[in-house]
Length: 174
View 1 (cartoon, rainbow, N blue to C red):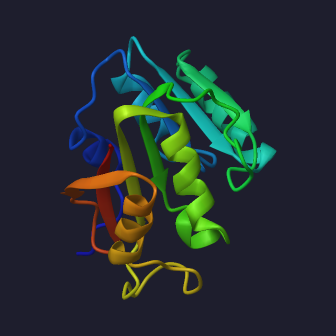
View 2 (view 1 turned 135 degrees about the vertical axis):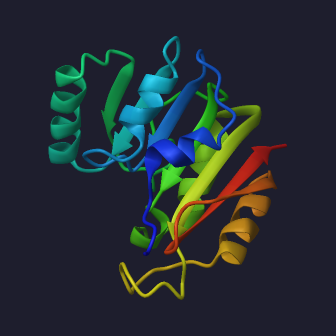
């Protein structure tokens, strides 16, 4: 049986501490943010998306589950300083299933680099180019992602088990 993305299982593979400050770029209506917020009980999770409707649904879901350590931002991550977050303020940025959708992939990685602290972690999960499921257009290979990350001051530290149709890479900001 095919394995799809399971945010809770993926998050277990990340070296998270309860007081970390993390952002999910392109969080949509659910993404990883609820699981991240539960794990980061003393921390903060920023959810950033370009669309208001998914953020509104996410806010309702967080309220229903009495999760209070989420801050949602409607913004375009492809713009300079698009996250609206301060320089070197985050411990981790998670970018799941976003790169295949954006035109300027480098801008997203560059923004992650700007907001991450030195030694901060960048986690990128996206569709495998050869996957039989999912979108057809815009997919990037793990090698392309690694090259983009390295160009923006990151070093690959780990590969994640993320299911049969995706790849997951973890980078450290140098």
